[in-house]
Length: 335
Image 1 (spheres, rainbow, N blue to C red):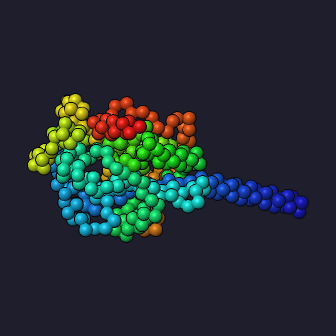
Image 2: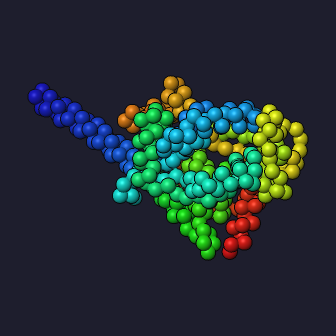
């Protein structure tokens, strides 16, 4: 009888040990899966923009500008930055694409009078530095104008992202890298193209196969009537402000692309910001509410998604619009 009790105790101790080891192994697995995290940081406009039509967008952009003209560290149209934490790096990497010359924007608007061509016009750009972004993220956090989505990723995804950043910042001709150019019509996974700020972040998600299907809710997709596009994108036409104010609707009829209209697709930071806050209030098995200090966000596990490393990082664009056509003419001429 005593022998049976001894054996039974040993058996239960053995089972307990197995469960303990199992829990330890699972904890170690989770720890490994958390070694690499990619975060999309979203900063909305300080005041909402109205994308219902060109006239309303112009009025809301002007209003936002006048209300924030003296505000330091302000991204007029909102901003998207990304962060990568990985055991492959010594510290977290903050990075974003931005424009580099306010004067260039003013020249396009005031002198060349490109009108709504400013939404897609390529211009000089640069990569924002880690320290610069760390400071601005802190500023926006204190304004309660910062939210994020954090993606747990695997090592292959992290390596592919780092390779993209290195190549994107490398020379594409004698003088420039793709990262030297900023524009709402550019997509950085196309060969030699720069990016807008939100396109830069979304492209990195797309690169490793984790751009979520919900991302279709994050962008605006409009056809800009050619009558409010000027400058080199429309035979030197100068667009008058009163023409924009009278254009209440986007182009909606059948027409010829780059002749009657220019299609503009943009991942909109303010839409992304609102989406994150709304998603936090939903019961969700994929996106979990997660706070980083006082900054609201979501966290999602994408460690199971293995990127196709055989696929080239950069591909050729098949159907460029007028903005990209003019951009490529200049890039190729510089080679």
